[in-house]
Length: 64
Image 1 (cartoon, rainbow, N blue to C red):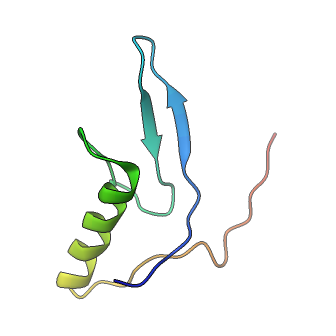
Image 2: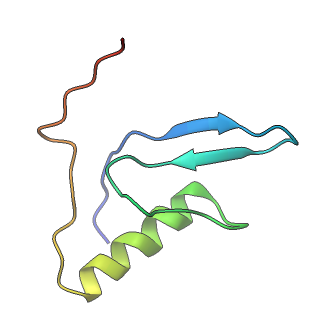
Image 3: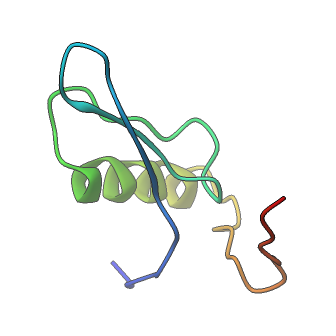
């Protein structure tokens, strides 16, 4: 599996733990696993379906 770099967002939960979002990979979530495992499974699924792996190449980030 090739290695990619992507931005992750962590939001602290009210009862502990964190919600993790990967903006480049919509729908990528982890249940009881690690962030890395969730991303790996997501990318494997895209590859198996013959879909392109998204990148952040043309993404601009701004804060308002």
